[in-house]
Structure formats: structure tokens, C-alpha cells
Length: 270
Image (cartoon, rainbow, N blue to C red; front, side, top):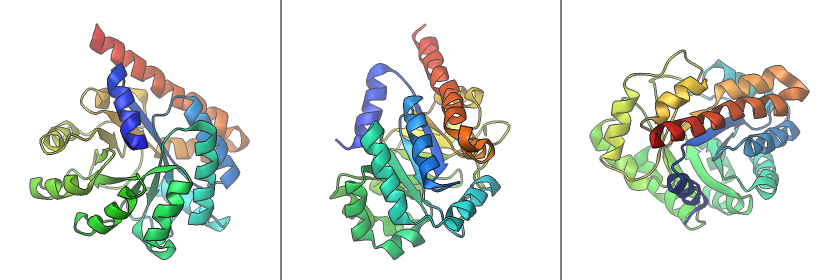
């Protein structure tokens, strides 16, 4: 089993739901990134998504775009991101998903990335702009290293395309709750429940819901039909605002979600 498979199997065995935080590596610096990753692990994160900063993050809203700019300004590279991932993995053993656009990975070299990601403890890779039609080769390279290829599914994805995505994805499927870019929103889209139902008809992989989830209340709603939630912009905003206090503030924020997981499980058992 891959590390992601183990993580989700553990959730299923205990009847729990998953909490997957996202942070941008290098914002404001890589040492803070490491400290925040440790804090998230201590707060009970199921998986940590570690974003590779990119100069043109088209799928991201203003909060993560700004974090990418700050990270690039201090010289954050993919090699440095892998190094901070290695440190965090050795400290916490919480699975890490490398979250990136395709261009930085191509510049690094896909075969080299697969080898180095394995050495860095990376459990999965998610490429926001990798078409399903082009995923087979990269998926095979990762699979040889026991690394999962996590894939995105948008609300506009057709049933035919959904089947193509499911053929190449492993680990879990990341469902985008709204059409648009990342960013905190006031409420969860009413369409996401139907989208998750469509996914379950073609895949047995766990399903995580993200893009727009920023409160424990939204997470509890999503956990009624999904296996995990992804929270990104709300955490990145805390890191930006809190400076040296960011690890502690992020830990407290993450704990509000992991405590909510217990509440959802208790409700289901009642």
C-alpha cells in the first residue's frame, strides 16, 4: 500500500474523516514552512499538501498568488521544497502531497522528480494543469516509486472525462467544490454533493473536497458525503498575517477542524 492508501485506510477503519491542509512552500520562508508543517501534523492533519510556488498560478486566488510571489522572491525552488518536505516527513511521518503546476516539474525533469520525491518522503503529486490524456506516463513514473498521482475533478467535468481521470488517479481524488479559483467562501456549493455521488459511481478512491472550505462548519457539511476536506487559503492567510506566531496560530486553527472530525464521527455513531 502507498502512504496515502494507508492514511485513508486508517480513517476508514476508525470511522473518521480526513483533514488535509494546504500551504505554499517558502512563504514567508522555508523554515516557517517546516515549522507550520510540524504544527499541522501535531494538530492531527491526515495529509499535508505542499504547494510549489509558480509565477503564473492560474487556478489560485489572490491569497495563494501572493504567497507564491513571496516564496519566489526569497528564492524558493522545487529542490528546496523537496528538502523541506524531507525534513517534515522525517519528523512527523504525515503523508505529503506535492501540489504543483506542470511547468516547474517539467523543468526539473519528471523522472528525476519521481526519484527525488521518493527520497524526500513525498506520498503523492497533484498537478493542477495536467490533462488526463497526458497523465499515463507520469503516473507510471510515480507508481514505480510507490507515489500516488492525485487528480482534480471540477464541477464541469463530464461523465466521460470523469472516467478517464479515474483511470489514472491513485491515492484519492480531489474534488473542486466550485468552478473558479481557490479562496475562502461563505458557503459550500450545493452542487458538490452531486459531483461526489457521480465520482463514487466510477471510482472507489477516497474523495476529498476543497476550494472554498474555510470553517469547521463547512467541513462538517462536506464530511457528510466526502472522505476528507482540503483547507488552503484560510491557512495561508494566517501564515501571512501572524509572522513568528504562525505555527502556533495554524496549529490552533487546524485543531478546530480535527476536533470537528470527532464530532462528526460521534454524530454518525449516535
